[in-house]
Image (cartoon, helix red, strand yellow):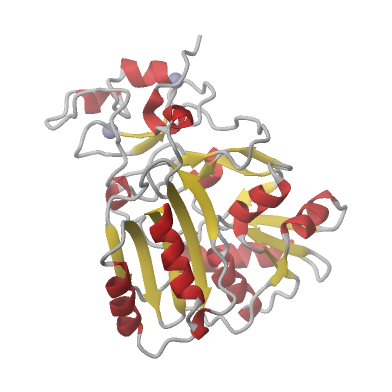
Amino acid sequence: MQKSMPSQCNLLTSKDKPLDYLVIAFYHLYHLENPEKEVALQKKFLASLDVKARTYVSKQGINAQMSALRADGEAYMEWLLSRPEFKGIEFKIQPHFEHVLPRLTVKTKKELAALGVEVSIDERGTYLSPAEWRHVLESSDDKIILDVRNDYEWELGHFEGSEPLQCTTFKESTDSIARIKQRINEKTKVLMYCTGGIRCELFSSLLKKEGIENVYQLHGGIIRYGEEEKSKHWSGKLFVFDDRLAVDLSDEKAPVIAKCCHCSASTETYYNCANMDCNELFLSCSDCLENLLGCCQESCKSAERVRPFQHSHKPFRRWYNYANKKKDLCTLSPGQDLSKGHH
Ligand SMILES: [Zn+2]
Ligand SMILES: [Zn+2]
């Protein structure tokens, strides 16, 4: 029998705490001559505020995740809205009881989201509002539904009928496009979604450039969909790149779909291996986690540098610096910089 999950994710204790913080996500595509200048402006404004962030600026725009003390987050959003270049910017805002990011990072990046290819964003897929997205999912239209996030995000939760699509490297992106082309005719709707929408902006441009016509993207991503349509046609949890790691899409119940990589029991919790030289990210039930002392596999238990096992430490402070894209769906291995925009 599976025991209840350990309070690894902090979510379980959140009920009693005041929601004094805001978790804010946004991206904005606009042409910048000088990304360094914007980085300097951002840093200057944020310096006096209680804000943690992972903000990337490129010549194509800005992509940010942040957590902030409520008043400071509001001041920041007001500041952006007051600047003409950010006209039309949309924020996704979730109240929370603490910071979810370890530090304030604002820097330039060549790509706002890693697709392995440079993409012009002139011609993108057609936006579907959350309601329109639901209608298409419910329709009998000829369609394919592409999840353009990482496989391990899809594993934890996704739209019914969707398929994961590796597109973090040039080869993966071009292979994916070739496979899509083989499967569609001129009537097929190619639908895509990601966490907040930015990967779709880029990947849909890529598909259009490759001559695929009927490309649609979920506007505002999964986050906006959860706000407006709750968990309809969604299974599992939403993977997020901060301390929360997994969140419910809405207060509507969604079936659990992820499985322990050791025993296949239902679970929705990722851990990183207690062997610090391994640090793989894996889905595990609490029984298996305990049996393996927090390690991803038996051999890691006897490794040289193993963190003492505890259910409740804040394990993922830096995991995105180590985790790697993997073949095996239940684990990640060291090396890949997951802190790149995957949203
Ligand atoms: Zn298990
Ligand atoms: Zn391991």
